[in-house]
Length: 112
Length: 116
Image 1 (cartoon, each protein chain N blue to C red):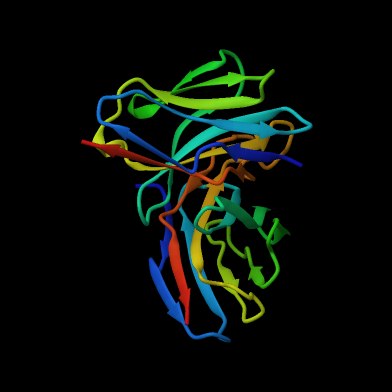
Image 2 (cartoon, rainbow over the protein chains, first blue to last red; image 1 turned 60 degrees about the horizontal axis):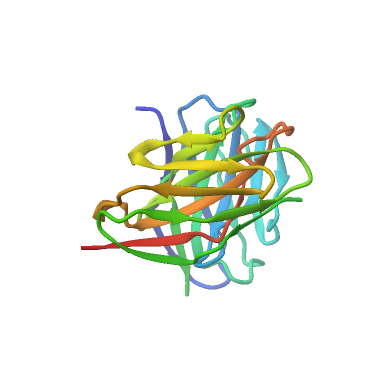
């Protein structure tokens, strides 16, 4: 079945450590996105990529980094510079020219 | 820049009653409009979308929404809710003239709780 796979579902890290969240899609979509969700704030765009080897900052990119070396993969690294990293992270993808975005099941990151 | 306001953070309703979840948006350009549903600790599922044409849009699970350009609103309705509709609902917009349509601006979310 086609879809977006985020792993792991739950992730715990100590403060000051970098952590990488995985996002893989087999939908053959060109564009991929990372959103952060906090209670009562909806979803906010962190980074997005429309093509391999290219990506742009979203609204809250500080403290995060991404790479897009393959069409299927768009990993997100939460660095120690992110002041409040505990959140639910959602990856999405879409076809260029199609308005609909498809979402993964999310990764809940807890930093202690 | 775009913004989305969901006017109710929580909506309690009894089973089989009608419900309306309100969404207003602000944008200087034409937009596409979406409603997504999220069950606890899961991703988002598309309920319906407005791209063009008829302003009344029908989606999955018996939901519908009406695009009102003059009032910049896109309210979600269901004539009779079920316990299984309990979830969080998000309204979102994207730039209709843009090249990256999955770049969405979301509202804050409305938690719908259906009571027996």
